[in-house]
Structures are given as C-alpha cells and as structure tokens.
Image 1 (cartoon, one colour):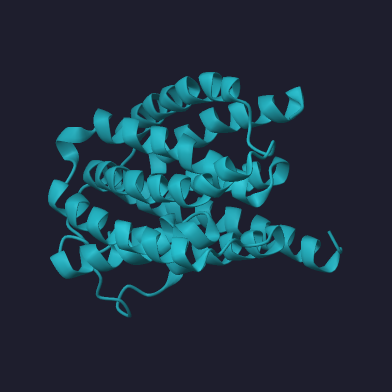
Image 2: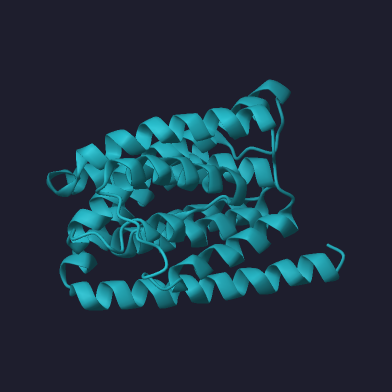
Length: 251
C-alpha cells in the first residue's frame, strides 16, 4: 500500500467517525466508499468493519447512559444468525455491485413511514432489524439507512437513537470482520492494510467520535433528522454515479 493511500484511509477514519458521531450512520456509508476506492472489496469490508467497530463501540461507551440495552440484546442474537447464514453462502460483491448497492441503500430513508410500521423498541422487530441490517451490511458493506427505518417511529431522543444504533452496529461490524476476515487470513493475502495504519486510524476514529458528540449536543432533534436524510441521500447519488462509471466504463 502506498503512503498516499494509507494517509487517505487514516484521514477518512477521522472525518467519517465525526459524521457518525453526529448523525449515527452517514460516516459508515462514506467510509465504505472511500475504502473501496483504494482497497479490494474483501479487504475494504474488513477494514471498514474494524474501524467502524471501534467508532461505534466508543460512541456507545460515551453515550452508554442513553443505550436501550434490551434492543441491543435482541439485535445481537439476530445479528449472529445473519452472519452465520452469509458465511455459509460465501457471497462477496464485485466493486461495481458494491457501489450500486451502497447507492441504493439510502433510498430506504424516503419510504413513507406509514408504509412500514416498524419500531425497534418492540421485541420481534428488534430481532428482525438485527437479521436484516446485519445481512445487508455483509452484502452491501453498509446498512445505516435500513437500521434508521426501525428507529424513525420510536419515541427515543436523538441521543438514545445514536447511542443504541452505535451499540447494535458493534455486532454488525463484528460479523463483517469475522465473515470476510477469516478467508483473508487463511489466504495470507497482501491486500489487507498494514497493522501500523490502524495505530493511527483507531485513535483518530475515537477522537472523531468525541468531536461528533460535541456537535450532536448543539443540534435539535428536528435538524438532526432532516440533515441525516439529505446527507445520506447525496452520498448515495455519488455512489450510483460511481457504479455507472464502473459498469459502463469497463473498469
């Protein structure tokens, strides 16, 4: 890996952790796209999983008093089942398909809430969210907008939403690391970033989480929800354009 690519990943870890600290999901979507630019798909999945595991885990720790642990527990059970299923299927998307899926995922935010009576605070739906979100995470690399669908109708505050989503995503990203990381380790490939990169990226990811939390404190619940939708949608449009370029440009 070149020094420029390593510096790009390290910077992206900080910036996207800050975004996630504010909006709860935009950062993961942006980070996955950044990693896919400079890494093979499987290596990008594992790197994304490790960095987001730290960012989400640290965010859950910082906001632990706001976490709904009942939702997290049910989500974790279903997340394990989804990880086991995808591992058996041994599915790995191509880079054009990855960008296409990432570009389509934000569209879930625009589904009329009256169409989907979803609420993660209800036990059956917490289980469904764990299975579907982790499954999509393992196929498309990201699933924040889908997770958001299960929280948009809850009565949780913005702090509770961000904290609980962060805790649930720890399990989704852990599944990504295990499912895609095991084959990489077994093949002894050089595609994976060097270990020293994480020595810089992980602390910066944690710092970005703290910075994002400070910004979150200054936002209202209304602004929080409005900005989340538009930022994620804009990122999705960029990814759709990238997918089109890869498909029709012969890359």
